[in-house]
Length: 247
Ligand code: NAP
Image (tube, rainbow, N blue to C red):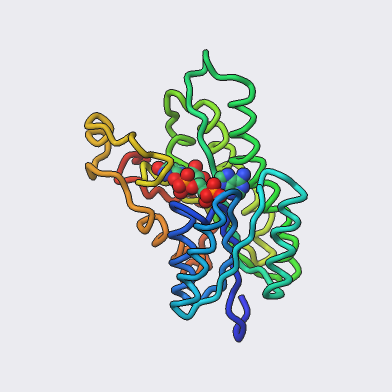
């Protein structure tokens, strides 16, 4: 990270939910934030205005991160705006839940394309910039589903487990180049993605007895991405899950 210049972050899927909270938490630390979204232009613009009204810097960057050309354009736009890229948060994700016997190839591919291939594409393009700068931090948002499995989520849990393997490998590849790579595994967080899921049965399975808040994931993200004390952490997966997974 530049000592004089404020660091620049790209947060994928930052228009809503966890990504939005991470963008806000980073902006509060003085980070300039590229707010990526695919459809929610108004929500992304809203977030940009909120950050700028609080004295921060942000820009909305449209693009589907499962598409190679779009990822190039997103990173290019970030570079054109601020001339650097220090932090990447691979957060964009979707679900297409159904039991395996009913899962169509399209359901499988849509989730793998965004939740796993999108992480590959963004990391490849962003890390090229970070390697030139000789510093950077990458954070991938995985899930407890990738650690413990979840009925109805064969596609999602496969992608999220893939993200964990990817995190560890890339962390090893970049360790000598000043770039750290970590992951957060959220449990059930109250966002559009989990709407209607908070049954009594689910809450009983969570030791802390409630869903998490996006800000609670963002707190860990802020530490890993901006705190000097996180410089010696790489290749790790941090659970923010109310105690759901205890390894
Ligand atoms: P969310 O509220 O549904 O928001 C998803 C975000 O991803 C939106 O900003 C959306 O943009 C963006 N997005 C979707 N498809 C995209 C694409 N092709 N290209 C770029 N952006 C795209 O989801 P969330 O709950 O915050 O989840 C965020 C991440 O955390 C995901 O990776 C998810 O798997 C993970 N996670 C969530 C939970 C949970 O309980 N919520 C638990 C574990 C892990 P638009 O607004 O433009 O559609």
